[in-house]
View 1 (cartoon, one colour):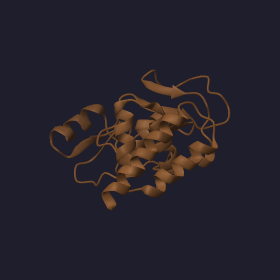
View 2 (view 1 turned 120 degrees about the vertical axis):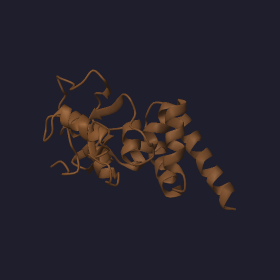
View 3 (view 1 turned 60 degrees about the vertical axis):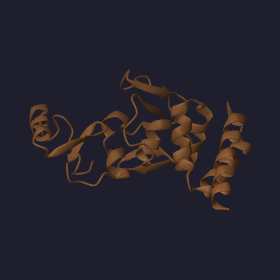
Length: 184
């Protein structure tokens, strides 16, 4: 069930009404929805704003999951999603998605705001395995002050066989070393 604080176009208000409310300062954009201007932006609201995009078959991953978890200030464009059901999908809801067809293990998913999102540990692993600047920056922010998360991600990567895992482990060990250096 969507939050009563989330307004989607043509759900309770038309596009014209939402634009007027936005111009009046009553609502602000949040992902694919609008929220009251005085509402506190939470993980549940960020995730819930994606309900029309993700439905119950897709999960937010990578930078999209990092945004839901509060690491990024703005939602990424395009959103990154992955199949959250065992059966293959014959129709992806939007061409404006980075879609990965491999199903996410249900143990790596958490329901937030009515949608599925990868857990912080899985999100950290995914971000570190991509290796570009945006993903590395998001991984660093997610790992900051969370040595337990970094250690869990290293342990999971060492136990599995995933593409780019060596580079991800090196990056995560660098985060751990930097954290240790600042606390001593």
